[in-house]
Image (cartoon, rainbow, N blue to C red):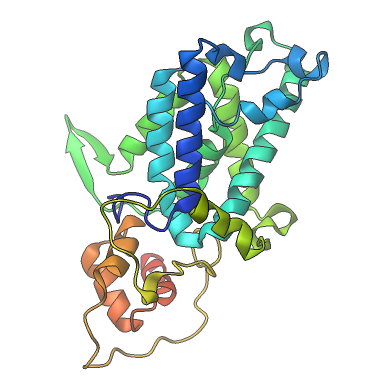
Length: 293
């Protein structure tokens, strides 16, 4: 399972989140105020410092957390490429909002002194992303080490486990709340997966951050990268796909790379694109349907 096209091609929202998290962590770290990024029961319920909830989303409290967090955010850009920047923005806002509400509720119910200050960072978004990662990203490589079975997804889980346990209870609670938020999104609570923002909101991120380096611009056939597809995976086939034409041109390399970045085998991705006449949405449907048989 590789990361697909290099850099942040077709993932402007992810790029903005990564840059913001890195800047907040570095700036507060240089000033020696990393601890101020976190928040506690007293901050919210007694001092009414609601602003801390917002600030805590962007910056990590330590360098190790930053490293693992940025790595996971960068990898999970695959979901933005899969569902499009518009719906991914909805996923981000839903995940962060719900996970923060769950954290506030948990602190209010537990009143645990060891949870005096929760660790900061986009834990809600990161651990929400593990839900579609578990259910919708297929394993492309399996291997054995000392008699134990591993897959290419193992390294992502290990990075997540490291982040989950980085500050013990202070990081475990945000992680659990993030997983719950991702589960609620997957269950389509309040029909959140049907929500779309006005296009200018999603395109704002493209103007906000600089172009990706090391990749060419996407072709017309893959520019909309599943923006109209249902979140994470297309569950049903909507019709019969036409048989490939003998004169069909070779699928664009960036279209193949996009499907490979979702975890599909390269040759299968190429055949699906040929069969769907280079329609990435239809090719994804074909690949997902083939896994159910």
